[in-house]
Structure formats: C-alpha cells, structure tokens
Amino acid sequence: ECYSQCLQQSMKDLSRAYRNFFSGRTAFPVFHRKYGANDAFRYPQGFKIDETGKQIYLPGIGFVKYRRSRYIEGKAKNITVIRKADGWYVSIQTEYEKEVPVHKGDEVGMDMGVAWFCTLSDGTQIAPCNALKKHLKKLAQMQRALSRKEKFSSNWKKAQREVAKLHQRIGNIRQDFINKVALDLSKKHAVI
Image (cartoon, rainbow, N blue to C red):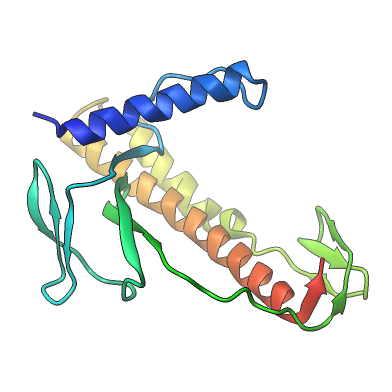
C-alpha cells in the first residue's frame, strides 16, 4: 500500500549509505529503529502543493491540511514527511536563486567550553541555555510515573507520549538557542 516513490527513495538512501561506508566516509549503516527519532519518508515527485488552501497532495495518501510556517520560495523539489512526538511535520525542499550575502565585521576566534557555552577571542562569554537542567525535575517525575505503569497498557502509552513530548521540548529549546547564537555571531563577525 506504500507509494512506490517513497520505497525507491529509501533504497537510494540505503545505496548512498553503503557507498559512503565503502569509501571510508562513514560507519556501517544501521537498521532503522522502530521508535527512533528518524521516522520519516520522502516524496521526490508526484506531490502537489496548494498554498492558498494550505493543502498538500501526497500520492497514496491524498490531500492533507498543513499549518504554514512561511511562504514557499522557488520550485519545490521534494517533500519529507516526519513523525515527531507531538505530531506530523512536512519539510519542503525548494530551489531558487539567491545572492550570496556579504558579511560585515571583523574576525573572531571561538572556544567551546563546559562552564560557558562558548568564549570569543574578544572576551565575550555566552552562557549555556541549560534546557535539561531546567526541566530535569519534571522529567524525573514523569519518568517515575511511567515506570510505575504496566508496560504497553493504555496509560503507559499515554505517559510515554508525554515523556517524549518533554524530550522534544528540551531538544527544541537547545536547537533554538544554537540557531540564535549562530545567527548573532554570523551577523556581527565576517570570519569565525
């Protein structure tokens, strides 16, 4: 029942993984885990995007509504559908011409640390976000509640989903922090 293009794309990804392994670029490919973080499939062609109606046509599934985070620029090349803890996400890869940005500012050296997230050569210190530390008490409480439940019961599955959502929130906070720091540094300095 799966759309043929998704299966062919999976085989292409596997072939690329083996090529990378035999050329010495990466480690041996591992099997997909049932509850892993990479639950996704890709449509290289055959999809349609209706931006006015906020719908995407996925072959084999049909029209699916989506919440648009930004307008699509350029020509859509492929669509990746990803399952995360709190639902399904769609990532649209596009192709368009864009000017190369010219960076203003000076050079700066950066040292990643433990006590500080990073220290710059001009003396600036950036504090870490400590996302896990801030949520550790709640996470421990939720994991204790999960451990008391009977495995694979309905309540266990609900509790597991809640723990997964909290882990995703912690990951999102970290990713947001890293993206903001990288953007700030790249705007202020030409070379890092």
